[in-house]
Amino acid sequence: MAGKILAANWKMNTIPADGVALVSEILNQWPDNHRAHTIICPPFTHLAFIAELLKNKPSFSLGAQNCHHEKKGAFTGGISVDMLKDLGVEYVIIGHSERRHIFHESEKDITSKVQRVIQAGMHVIFCCGELLKYRKQGLETSIVESQLKSSLGALSDTEMKQVTIAYEPVWAIGTGETASPQQAQNMHKTIRHWISKQWNNDIADKCSILYGGSVKPGNAKALFMQTDVNGGLIGGASLNAQDFKAIYHAMI
Ligand code: PEP
Image (tube, rainbow, N blue to C red; front, side, top):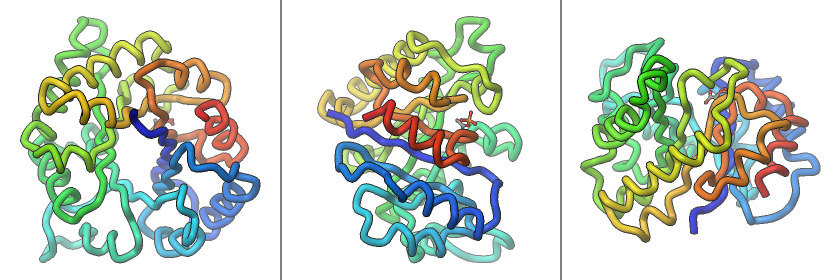
């Protein structure tokens, strides 16, 4: 059975002091259980501070929002996976729609990043999702399957176990518009089926598939009740400790 995961993607928000205060507030009164895992993905500048707060919190992990695909070298401004790992980062978000569409990351860049993170022994949160124009044409399944195939298709069984998938329809990210629970379930089921064909049933059953796209306290429960929705990747609502906690409670 796939583990339940709630991941916070803070994007380019907060300064480190605000981030520390936010994590402290999240940790305060967070239910002490191991039924679900929480991953905090702050900006790079916050990682060292937040790593301190998450020490000895086994149900929490530190995540990064991006990394460079090369191991090291003359890449001004780049952040390598070794740098992240050294700070205690265990998960890296790869393929987020903002990286694909605003930063124009290609499938090739995304695939290289996936491989780099896996080789470092870390976990990938692999984002996939279709633009509204493709959903309107009924092409959402083929778009998502082609993103999965292109960046994950060559992974071995062992490597695939280091991957968590986040289905994030682009039209639902930061827009206030959410996929309906049925739309989310249909796509998550398709993704799990694709994994079982590509690898096997065991890997598919154990792969956590998160939904992302305007998840809020008010819509979280209906989404998380779906059989193949194993949690969420939360953007805007993860910047408010009370909302993030409410979403967590809707999941467990
Ligand atoms: C995201 O950034 O991955 C995301 C899902 O954002 P939001 O929750 O704000 O739509």
